[in-house]
Image (cartoon, rainbow, N blue to C red; front, side, top):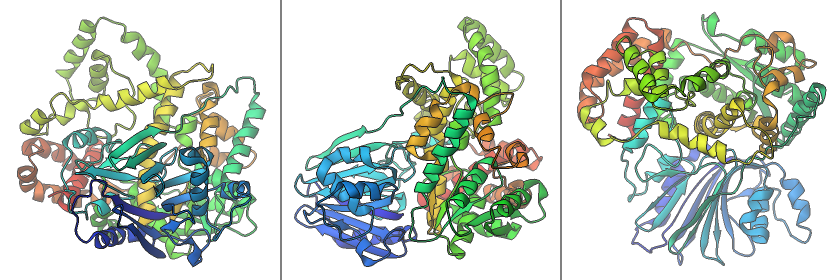
Length: 633
């Protein structure tokens, strides 16, 4: 796990102090790799590569990057290739100078070219300079676990693991991308290829790129989901596969030359990972949990402790106090140079900090299970209501519009109005990850000038993109259904753009590596192929996963109500956020031209009145104001 940077001045534009620039880029992301750093340059070709190393495999100097092969191919790489030892055996006559997975990527590229990506099982983002072809080759892993950003401006291609490093380049300006901002208000995240910065782009998961002497030559997907038919399997057989395939993924992710531990909430997902880790290690693993001082309704520690006792882990806990949150709030915009309005970042940050303080450099998490196995209660409601929504969508548009207009006169802020509004426009029922402001609400607090600038833009385009992507996938004779669509969209949308981005930046802010066994691409193919009847059954979400672990985990863990990472944000920091927003509101609205001051005041007043539904909206506004002051204004 590391940080990578670089630029390729393919147009030979005049740049001063190139090596100093790559050094500054490295320093900007030194938290991603505090163990070592390096730079490499080819002055003739105007190529500069930088690397910050977090040593996980082969802790010696032989793992130093940028790494150069005997043929002159150069790589900077962030991630882990879990099958590198198997791949190493295929290179029979190859001389190796390290025990790293980095070296495997170099040699497999030299042997197979771009097709080397088909052989790699892991999480990665890398850039590779091919001296023979005079090309820069970049790739991001299939699921999007590791981030990769780039900018192609005035004949100079630059890339990095984090946006903040790109902003050190003098030809890249920190300008707001207004369309990305408009969509962010709905989704609380930014979709690729957008970032919140104009002219800075984000790699799609599972994509590769080639940059030659005339600029970007190729940018395309190299991986697609592969659905299989498991309809002939009995429940017992399917349960065995759920566990055995996940165990294989966990075994792969125990690969490390530094200590490996786990985040443990006491829920199904993290508990299943801990159970399989304990089975496949000879010494007790360290597990980490979090609680909140004097806030029992947010506390899951007793369940985490129960799992720890069952599997004999070395368990450590962090009790977060109100003062901890107060001190952390200003840091969050330093960590998220690309905005993510998510209050659950707070506990994940403190868990990552706790792990690092206790010498655990690699952490396994349970992320991804809910999306693969349809584990959200809210999704169950969508599944139940979708047939009715689909039926109503067949009504004449004039009738659907009349329903929406009539309800809008009663309460435009109601979620029911939003549903009727979508129905009237013939849109999808479920908008993946739309946890921010409703479309009908955004215009109530955006300035008239900004609304004019984004005229014709519709956040529904993001929803439609993933729907069309789902419809384009070959199902191998598997009949698709609404649950399949929900799970697919969760994988392609929420997982990389929300959960994995959050995990990467919070983990790396504390110099630890987070690994996600549920998101091994082979396991993803399997889980998404499981029939819908095994995902929701007997009114139980994530049915087959829970059934598969009944002989391993207690029912108290498997079948208790899902709690998730919750934070006493309103109780502990509500006043701080309200005061910050109110005291900066007038100047902020004037400086940015984005918001209508009176419209925003109405949103804040709802929080003052104790409306719990508005706390997430307050957090979004607070975060955006603080973020823009840090990165844009």
